[in-house]
Length: 177
Image 1 (cartoon, rainbow, N blue to C red):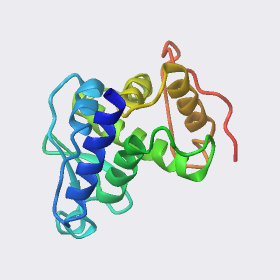
Image 2 (tube, rainbow, N blue to C red):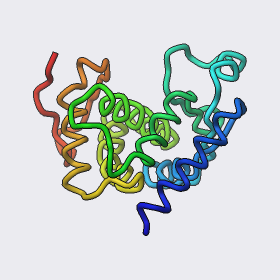
Image 3 (cartoon, rainbow, N blue to C red):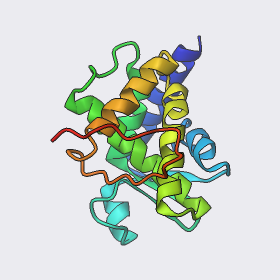
Image 4 (cartoon, helix red, strand yellow):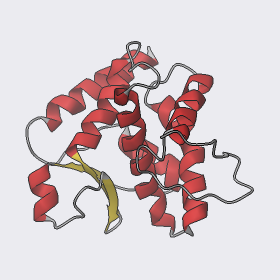
């Protein structure tokens, strides 16, 4: 039943987002709160809105005036992932890596509200990655952990620079090119 509710909410959010105005998928504020420990507004912006607000070109998500602003494409990718189960993207495909990159960037934006040093912020984003995937409907903790491991292995290819503390419970595997 939970998976059906997640998929239903995701499909409604995708339909609302296609109208062309700022929108908020129902799951993203929950994930932002898991990552930051604080309630943060989340808004998905169209390309036109992103450019009008003079936000960084090429960014997927940023913290701006205590709100997490997410590029429309990244919102659609994350919400689409939630709606896709049990037919989620196959492991290691470009579709799965697009989801993981979008979700990781979203988590980093949410964690930045805490104003932590980079290595602590990256560690926190990685620690909250598995719970975020479970919130999106991933079938198990092991499945979500494997998705995170694939993200970390592909981080160089995805142009994601991650710096963590030595005592971070999530360790970085060797990268692939």
